[in-house]
Image (cartoon, rainbow over all chains, first blue to last red; front, side, top):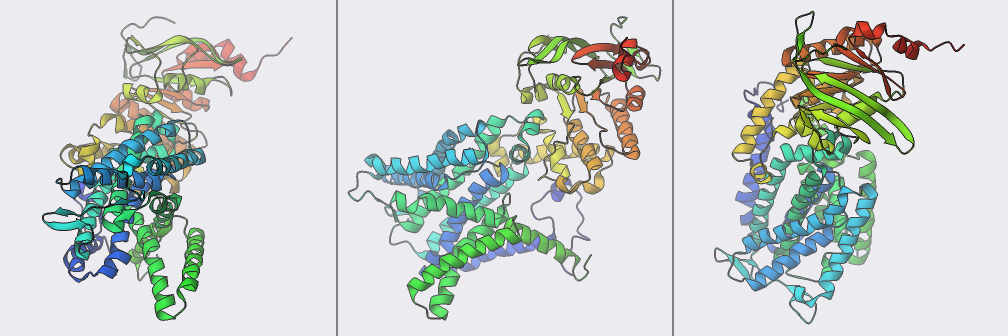
Amino acid sequence: MFYREAGDFKTSYRADSQTFPIRLDRMGYFAALAVAYGVVPFVIDDYWANAVFVPFLIYAIAAIGLNILVGYAGQVSLGTGGFMAVGAYAVYKLMTAFPEVPIFLHVILAGGITACVGVLFGLPSLRIKGFYLAVATLAAQFFLVWLFNKVPWFYNYSASGQITAPDRTMFGIFITGAQTSAAAKYLFCLVILTLVALMARNLTRGTVGRKWMAIRDMDIAAEIIGVNPLSAKVTAFAVSSFFIGIAGALLFSVYLGAAEVGEAFGINKSFLVLFMVIIGGLGSIFGSFAGAAFLVLLPVFLKNVLVGGLGWPTDVAAHLELMIVGALIVVFLIVEPHGLAQIWRIAKEKLRLWPFPH
Amino acid sequence: MKDMGEGYTTPDGRRIGPVLMELRNITLRFGGVVAIKDISFDIREGEIRAIIGPNGAGKSSMLNVISGFYVPTEGEVWFRGEKRGPMRPYQVARLGIARTFQNIALFDGMSVLDNIMTGRLTLMQSGLFSQALWWGKAAAEEDEHREKVEKIIDFLEIQNIRKTPVGRLPYGLKKRVELARALAAEPKILLLDEPMAGMNVEEKEDMCRFILDVNDEFGTTTVLIEHDMGVVMDLSDRVVVMDYGRKIGDGPPEEVRNNQDVIDAYLGVAHA
């Protein structure tokens, strides 16, 4: 009844093509931002930061990155874990080599390095499509993990073969290392996520995004109207890997603190992020958030209900959790193959007409 | 046919300019199959040029040669007085040649507006970083091109569906959106591959009106393939007739209609 576009007149093309054309949506967006920046940092504790907020923020970045490649440009990739590892090892090498540079810059640079690697592995996409491309990116996943395991230079010849994030600060506040506060971790990831989401939105609504979607929907027609398929696919791989590299850098330096490549960035990670994108909704920025929230929060929620609420043993709960999450994924894909974003869209369309059915 | 030099004026007062594109001795082979055999013709500025012929005559192949989708095995394509080298289709698009497809080739996941905006991709220049930050050039450019696209939307009378995803539209409207996308590129030559296939009478009339209006309003040179003879004879200034990959007729509709080879190709010949 209150959710209406009637009376909300647009007098310029810019107003018409804004991200949230309906006033209530716009208010909701600013309210969410206000809560995320103004309230959560003051009430957050270690449990909430480590179990819920920080992983959600980091996976949301990764999901946005993968969504650009799979959802917008239509190039299937199973190399996400490998590209996140590139980001993690890049930030590690940068942090240890240039300790005085602010960590923010390192994270961005790590993203840039990942973008270059992504372009390299994206070049075959010009000749191979669909499942075959997925297999080619799978090769990237295994090769990169192998590389970081086998070449000691990447982990600075440490005895365990692990990489450990040194203490680094920004404006005198610890961002990485054991002394970091929950609020600092949260805010650092939140700022980067906000920037990433804005950039992703801007790219997908403009010329670049249209080129990607044209290639996705019909590559022959796209070429006929003047899209250079090589440059469109390569930019998609570059931008996607840039975001995924940032997510990998944050996952290692801010969240995990120490990582072993096969365990932290294995094929499981690739599938996890891909599931987030599919469940959230291909070709939707909101869907990336929704998918990341779903797959990060659901296990935490189930664990709290099963162990905390029902008092079941932890190992039974852990197995059950896997089964429930798996079953829910299947149910979701049957009920709404276009993901949570589509459910949201339908709900909004219904809401606009409510209380009338048509 | 007589030489018309720098152009002429049609009986209904439209100005036809000099030769814009010339196809010289085009031959196209796929292995042993000869799709086009030694065909030459020209396209003049501002005219509506039809290519007709029975099924399998090589009309679509000819259009694909013009749009750069096929590279001819032999022969030359001259465009605006220059010989066109071997090019990828997206490079040909940048020369100002736009087309529609026989089986609609729109981007189903995108809205009508976005589909038409893709037509202007070759005219937009802002870079990746400018767009990522939506700063300066990118946003201004978007508005500027949106205005041009809105004019085309008005022109083709599709205002009410501009935000609808293309996948939900009926066939006739999809054809119109595809025409809009091609027009958005402000093409020097517009190629239409069976723009009226599968349409009912009203839709055909609409489409004819749009093709004539486009030619009238923007002076767009149009090359079209069509099976409906009534439409071809009404719309076009000059007609190329193809059969089995060869050219069997070329000229104004009245002339072609009375050409014995053309009549034979369409109606068949009694073998003695």
